[in-house]
Length: 209
Image 1: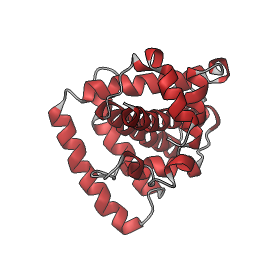
Image 2: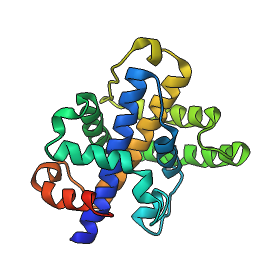
Image 3: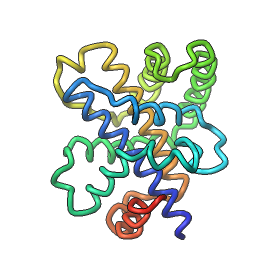
Image 4: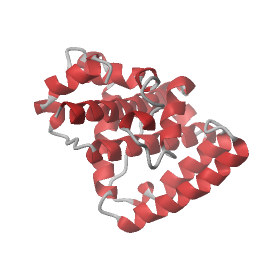
């Protein structure tokens, strides 16, 4: 049980980190690369030996997900009012959208094929933060998840959201959130856990995963 809760806490931190990064991009047009890179790296980690390995390994996971861990603790604790409502909405929307994706085997297959293309692209650019790689991840999201009836509506400053580079970053980070939501489901996470399993998850978020 504890092992499951720790894994769920890692996935939850990643979801909230992605949600906060999207909210900041939409409002301020800025992306914190320190927290974006481990999320983008996670998209290409397919056969990890542990949940921590998806986000940098046992000794890096804690720092790589520090932003999401803080946001998740605030949302489930007494600091909810200090969290941007859009961040919470994006996080819940990612979980919901992934549940829809889970029922679309053809779309999952298409995403798998695109991941293969991204791996080859990354061999060429050697940096997941390269704008062409980010654009590739954005395109994967746009060609698959954007086609589902349920879509995540991103609200913010149109001066930023209308810039192609920022639009690519938003979609790429949303894709990382979907990847984290997939992990959340795979390790037994359910939406009702955010309410009824709050104390258990908080304990894991406050520790070292």
